Length: 144
Image (cartoon, helix red, strand yellow):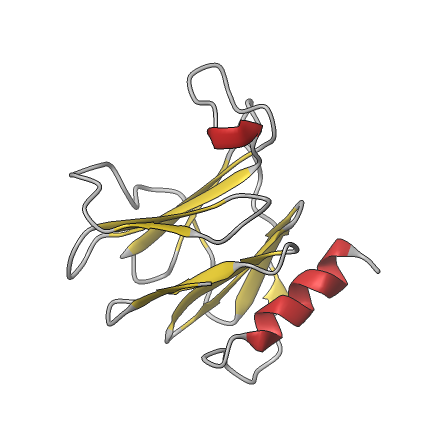
């Protein structure tokens, strides 16, 4: 079974997903393999870091890693690795988020390696093929 099929099944397990079929959006990586995207609201920003990390950042356990931050109403960060549940950091301190990068359009999905995210007007849902994931919106944050 492919990673995309597994990721789609995991995303379907999240009750808050919209019923519409999402289009897959391609977002280019930078020179070190990181991929950054924001939701259209500009309130949630994510960074994918490949296995092995970069010259300046090494994910816990060697990666890959997906880290998403929400700005309002309170700043939170959720980190998802290839194994185990997502980690919610409720007070990560002020950090840069949501700059001028590609927007993951509402109704669109993004996939890289074992990670898949779906952007909707209700929020951002991300999952790994390992069966874990999270939902982030202005109203709530849920990790699995």
